[in-house]
Length: 465
View 1 (tube, one colour):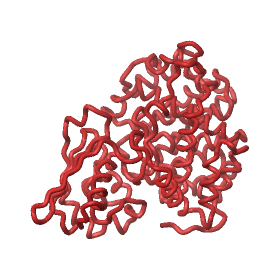
View 2 (tube, one colour; view 1 turned 120 degrees about the vertical axis):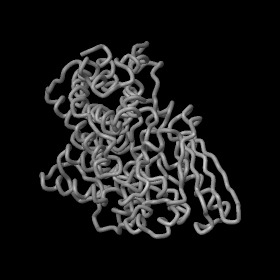
View 3 (cartoon, helix red, strand yellow; view 1 turned 90 degrees about the horizontal axis):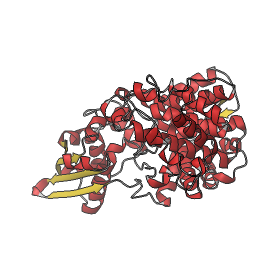
View 4 (cartoon, helix red, strand yellow; view 1 turned 30 degrees about the vertical axis):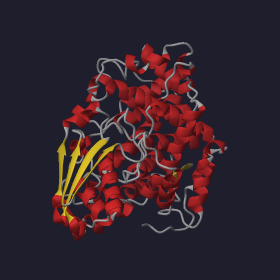
């Protein structure tokens, strides 16, 4: 295989995440388990679970259900559930939702391998870094200028890396896993706001696991699947034509374990979501909710909501008048109106009765969104400016640089715990949510991930809210 792919494969097999990186990875695992438990009852997840059940039994848990199935089906089902609510984290380097593919792949492969919690966390960390390294050479063109959804394209390669690591593949096998995964990497942004968007995460997780399991059995791929003339970078409109920019620090002293190695999970971090909607809405939602709490106005007081954003935001928020819950997550008029009407944005905001609620629909025409080109000079989806025009001529303005949960404004432990327990209660009854939270808080001490998975499977019915 090419020198660059060989360096990536060596990293997958042998890199040792430093303690701080493992801490970040463990926190991401915990948050992702929570949103997976919540998403497991969503229609998109239920349909996939039914297929997984029909396809037979296995040793791998389908989180939030009593079902165990084969590794690839479990990865698919859990990936869909993790992304079903759009409540899962994101990364501004890969421009993907990393964890909704990485964790399902690592968990399913980890159960197959009877891996430890420490191995699960390391696999997540390695997969995250592979996604970021690809993101550096493929974006922004891959995501911004074409129709590719990085969660499913780059995410497939990251999932293969995570699965390969937890399965203990040697560098050569890991390289072939990445190459196999490259031929199944796909996902179109035209499907944002539909059931297919969470399916993207599930397919990435499934295809990553399949690639790693095939490579473990001796399956091989072209040595240039990633960076050949007709490889991943070329076919998917990557910003750069080679992987050179993805491996610069892997060529120094010590290679994949050397002191020059940069861990993007520390340098850039992970963006945790505190609202179950497209991240492009989050800076605006922070502003509106903070203004509503501080100024104590009501929806009846609002005459106009003027929102200024970067140029990427309207390319993601494509529904002005959503008709489904999934479309509502990609609608600035709906999300902004719901924040003003309800004073909160949570899972219940996108219930069918709220999507069509007359009080919210009455405010939506008052919402306008325009691009401020100055916002494009910084990280995408970070800046927003809101002007509220109220009855009596009162005008309120506020601006945001990022939202709560972004790396520069991390969510508090109380916020993360509240989010997890609210999510987990959708599928786990009694004190099961608290027990799962406690186990995940010390995930690296778990001797076998199947024991952790057992805690994520309901024994009695829980209420969905």
